[in-house]
Image (cartoon, rainbow, N blue to C red; front, side, top):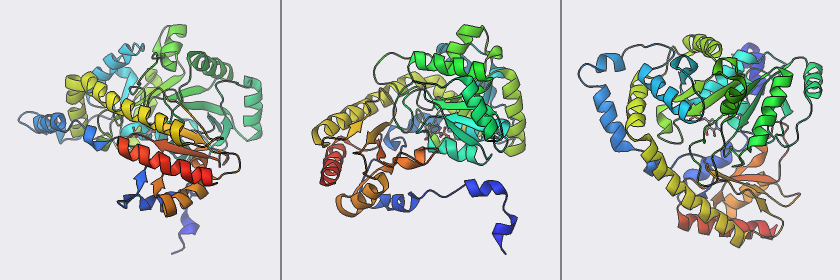
Length: 402
Ligand SMILES: Cc1ncc(COP(=O)(O)O)c(C=O)c1O
């Protein structure tokens, strides 16, 4: 069988990551890893989930937990989320909420919903590589969204037309972005809204890390700013993607979309066609755990990650040679390093794994245009303080050696 003969064109855009082979080495015990941007499993609320799962499988509830269910999601969870969103300045009803299998599924559905081959998506340089992966299947062109210095709508539109389509949406992570850890300030958020109002496209607001703020003032989500302008979520172009992965547990695959009800209606059709609905049992468990302990649990998670972030920033100050720059995130899991000009992050990783045994993610894969060779992403979410000190010292030594 020649599989190339039967593959759709979209497959040419779906490539295995070049760094995956290197990252396979991470399981070796002597490696200090700042690579995976995943939660520390020691922070999972295991007892709360044990009790919630047992309850969901108990008398009178197991029939619901194990049965097919509606595509929109488990109603008590949608109700909790509507109240949660109101707390973020986004008054909405359950008709504005769709439960998805992680926010990653929302990104896939939004690509499917809006991108025809050749259409343009605006993204930051760099951006979440999983979003590029999700959108790539729908064969878009990317143009650069820089919240600090937007080009005018006409310019974006003309470039999109040249590429054979239209600007369909801007995608951005507003708080503590993956990979940079940076937060878009309020004027930056307003400018994205202005731009997309002028272009006539949607805004996809990825809020995966929103709850993990360690210091500084919370900034209203773009969707909240837009509701303040327009009066109702029903008149908004912003589509908010949330997730329980970074706060409760990623393995349950529970996320949500909050948007105007016609958008939710379209996404429900997509979910029906793709997987019918997300796991009912998992949604029931998440609803109960969120109801009972969300705020207290997330406060505990924040305290642990904040200490690790502080530790990593202090270690970077002590050990990084001149010419290295890094971000100072107010939350999330990542610090983004810019290496001296001409130094390549992928080469550095290969050398680091061989000699210093420290792992991280080279930055290039986060750039839609393949630039960013002299950048790397470090995650502080899983390493303890001793490992952070030792790992950053070794990395500083390696970089200093050139
Ligand atoms: C910015 C961002 N968005 C979305 C996701 C997807 O998360 P999930 O599908 O677990 O909600 C991730 C995961 O790392 C992420 O970093």
